[in-house]
Length: 278
Image 1: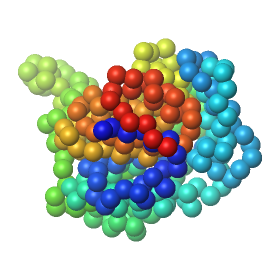
Image 2: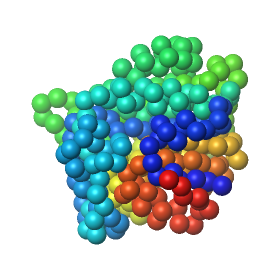
Image 3: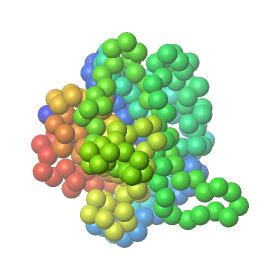
């Protein structure tokens, strides 16, 4: 059965057998150095405690209250001491034809590329996806940062699974340059994905501060897994990967030790058969 585990992702991953997942999606906190308080939403509030070295990861920094706000802390010094062993475990859990997606931003992605090249080999690198959006404040002192990076590595460069035909097509940016038939069919996405963030007023919004758009995860799940395959998200957050996997007929294991995240997933996945552990 699909599973949501409340607890430390490293400990849970170490309990799992080698090669169990066709797709692993890692969306760790980005080490922004910021504390973010979300707007008032349906759900619970998770207040960050300033004590502890790994706020936001091991659960010590969160206390659930009855108020209806979410908070998220992305400040800690030992980022790679935390992330590297989790990447190693994720790679062990990847099936022989599996694919790993690591979602970061400009602050850490270059370090992640060097780390993964050394850990698994440069020949396992498949793509760097740029997810670009156009929303939010604009700096006047530099080019505004409006994209995130997703590194894609495959377990075996000769036999990895990838199904471009299953991916939702997108509109041509210049439909007048192609035939009406091709314009109506749309084009396959490239490694640059133009996709809006989760709308602050949209139905998809859960209020969880790091929520990713369903469309982005849907594309990843479509391309790199088959119906019935297992999908792993060790930093599940609002449960977008789980929601995409369930909608597309995949099985999932979502892990998060933040009580607020698990509460959001319980509500979001209410219609999905899920076993909750931890």
